[in-house]
Length: 355
Image (tube, rainbow, N blue to C red; front, top):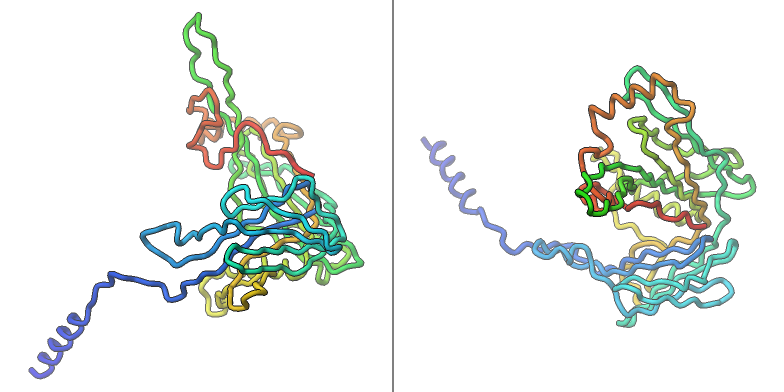
């Protein structure tokens, strides 16, 4: 009987301690300044984005995203003490003159003076020579089923033997999609021009990081996923290959390490990742982000879905289209760039490949 009374007492005590949380606050609130900018060997203008991280507020999404830092004085200074002013074209978004272009072998530094007196500087970093691709091509791989047919894409970096090199590579795919033109209006009304082909550019946030440790001076393969042979619309792969310093490489590597944490006991402990910027006027001011200085080469590969494709493979693919309707053919539009239902729709033309 005593055990029963004790049990009932414990239940009552535990339930009486239940408290509803109505005013939740995060203990690790921060007022860190977040910076991202870039200078390379391609034509400008270049941009720098400034934000201030703010406290988490479940009722105000803008607090979580951060707020732009406006009315700052933002400059880029080279190793010869030339100063290049940047202009705020949107809140917290600063731009150089389009005439300013990075020079290989020159050093560059970002300097920021905020309206409230904070002075932020990056390291002085050398703009390295852009990397060179030794190969960038593909081969068609046939299969019994159309869904298993694909193009294996291969790319290799030509690494110089004289230096220690680090590479940061972005991949962006551009995939054409097709809609169907609606029935034209009855005469004598003119038939509108129908633009049925557009491009989508799926978002990709996973860079490839490579270094020439133990392979210095050799051709370094770039891991690239294959492209499925599931339609006869165009497919373009773009690689932006950055040659960067060891510090910038390590920054992106730490970001990737944290992104790929799987919850295992041997995973690295998540921590705040500090880049190459610091507040020299107030050492207590936290500065996050990176100012990237590096040579970059942009290359595009067009997948040809017709040349050297076996007839039986092509016929299987055409039959497969009728089943899965990859081309949005049931969607009727005079202008496919208004197809808001297609994710990452960038319109009728590809963006220019700036050099």
